[in-house]
Length: 179
Image (cartoon, rainbow, N blue to C red):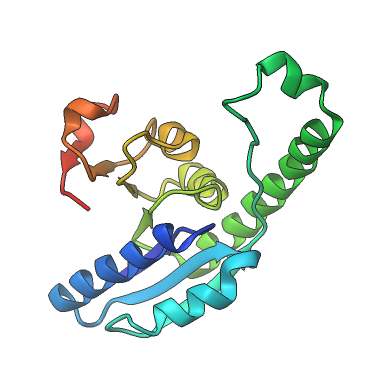
């Protein structure tokens, strides 16, 4: 089995992936794993992936995030050039990440993609959707992030860290598994 795991932006999106890899490796020792993260978190990801039970190849892609700030009104955010410019630039990073992800998924041909969450998952999720590769997402946040909310629309399965009553994911594809 080939597993493409993706997460990043923080250790909270990466360390649980190691646990998932270890559980899969216990069930299927011949699993091949590639982990995708953003360039800024590559060094830390390589260090964390050394704790996996099987060798993990770490790849990086371009990724951008959509900045939104709860303490500012939407109008104020739209009038702040620094926020607007950063979001516009990140649209191009996301598009570049989608292209990189399409190439990676086409070349490596994973059987399944496991997405832990964070902005780096979106380009890989879009590539998976285009190429019809099943995606499993895990959301352990009390308040689901934007990427997981978007990807839940096409994910084959959704694992949650909290009971399902706390999420608005489709019940037919969701399962409470814990953190």
